[in-house]
Image (cartoon, rainbow, N blue to C red; front, top):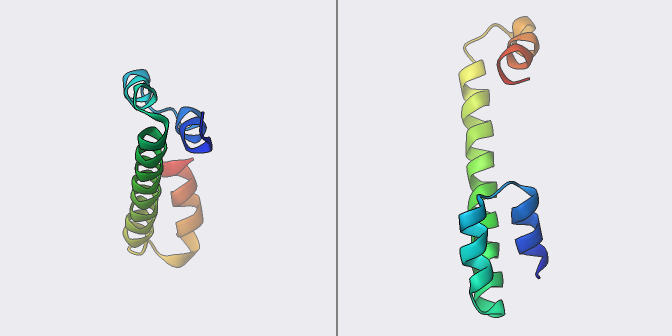
Length: 72
């Protein structure tokens, strides 16, 4: 099992998606897992950027407490 597939398991990819990836030949499974991980990382960066842009409307001294209240 490739490191990429293990990373997907650790990130909580649904079982049916993991089963599909694991059913592929090793080289294809690894490539698909790498592509899925890259997409997840891109999504995470975009969400982070959107969150920061949304917090820009909050006055500076209140941003950290608001971010903590909204996103933990």
